[in-house]
Length: 211
Image (tube, rainbow, N blue to C red):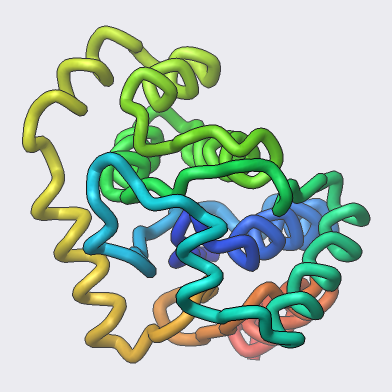
């Protein structure tokens, strides 16, 4: 079964969704034979130097009870998935274009899921600036990719147009929020669904194929 997961690496729900998918795939081993993480940009106009996270959220959400409740939920669910969100430390939100380029290249190396997970871990748990190309290269090397090649690719325009094109294609498909799970190009599931929900979708599609 093919599965495309549309994410942005500065979306905490995408981090939860990725970890829930990990659990679902453990529950249904060997069923997903082609998994690919696809790009989305919640802040495509974020400058290269990034923006202060606290200031950004204060401007966007203010001191809303919804934001507080959302973070409490993220902390609670994250703990069950091995995620320790840090929403208190000083952090800079980076433009995610380069991170998405790296994730795209990681597919051919067979480490796309690992690279995506590590980037989100660095941002959400360690408050690292994921717009830093040296940081992205270190992730690539850590996951077994060619650091020199990745350094050269990041310094070029390689796949910038392709990543932006995929983001646009997702928007044209009607994707307005992430994560979005697209099974076999026909069944879409939105949001950070629990593992058993994702496993249930897999079961339903398999049953339809058998029928």
